[in-house]
Length: 100
Image 1 (tube, rainbow, N blue to C red):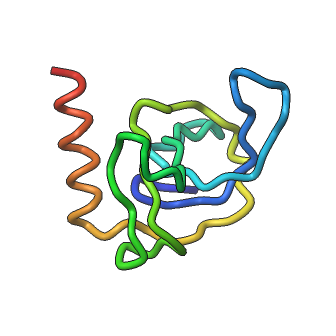
Image 2 (spheres, rainbow, N blue to C red):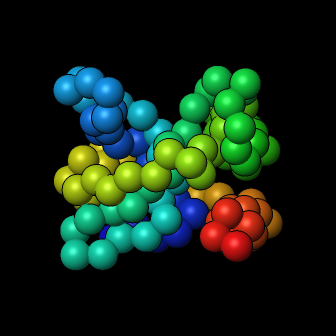
């Protein structure tokens, strides 16, 4: 079972194509075999929450809270690392801002 703050490597199908690609994602929650995730990109020009090697990432990246989707737990290849507590708090704070 994956939990909030896990960074996973998963098979992702993009909305603009039928292609499935292997990409990192942030687990928001898992329920009944469905995992809600936020996409992660290495395109530093994108808006979102910075993810750094200090956090556990291989290279500087961006957590895109505007790119949220549901995948099957079976599409997760492996867990890469977990976000530190302060970064998880920032994710929650940013969501609250977006929902306000």
